[in-house]
Amino acid sequence: MFQSVRRQSRTLLVLSAITAIALSGCSGNSSTSAPGGANGSAASNAPGGGAVASNAPGGGGGGAGALTGAAAAFATINSYKFSMTLAGGPYSSMLSMFGGAGASGGAAFSIGGTVTVKPEKASDVKILTMHMISVGGFDYTDLGMGGFSKSPSSGTSVGDSLSPSLMFSSFGSMSDYSKVGSGNKNGLDADHYQANSSAFAAMGPSLQVPADATWTGDIWIAKNGGYPVSAAILAKTSGGTVSFQMTYDITNVNDASNKVSVPTNVLP
Image (cartoon, rainbow, N blue to C red; front, side, top):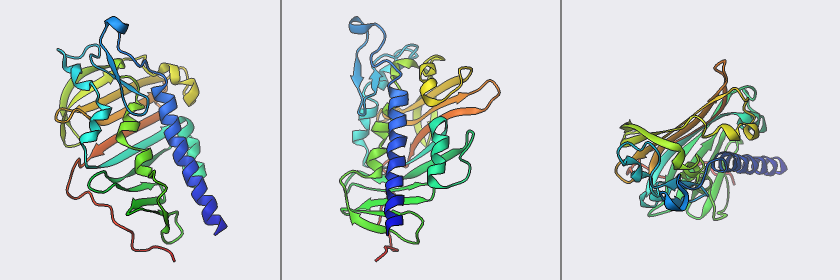
């Protein structure tokens, strides 16, 4: 019993740390307004503290206007699947908190699941060996002990903590990005934006990234709906080693197969 409580507390601590690093490390670095100040293009605040500019530089013939309110555009989504990959910097050391292998160097770990917003708010998320389900007013947590423990919902699920509007806003200000093309991304017709070379360099020290690392940033915005469907920040050393990686993708938007169910193996 006490071991279960300790492990659950560790789970919540790691989840909180993942969110905190994402938000403070990335969104805190970039400008929250578009170039030009009050006389330039306006910026609108995205949920979670990020900002999206209404006219990013190099927007390809005005195409950057599609970025206005991109993170907030998720209000039109009823359900989706998401996946994250995290590596390097503070994320590598987090692996040891789970008691798993690969906790050194640039080792990566993944988070993913299914989230429904309407008609019922629910989520089914896996983080390494942990499985967390929130549905029907209850939270179900499997920490590798042979079944799910059940508790009344706290009101904020894992799906809320890692929601698209929150996570995508952590990838910085869209004024740092320029449109470079279009294509199919995660099954959707989307516009592709890339960050300028210096967009993330300032956050290197806080994320334990060497000064010689090269940063890249990419965001894909759905043409129909105007919301981001994919984003990636990557830092590599001159030798090609991954020093930091954070990716976030959503798929199966409003797919009828997106279901969250009560687990069958609930512990007594």
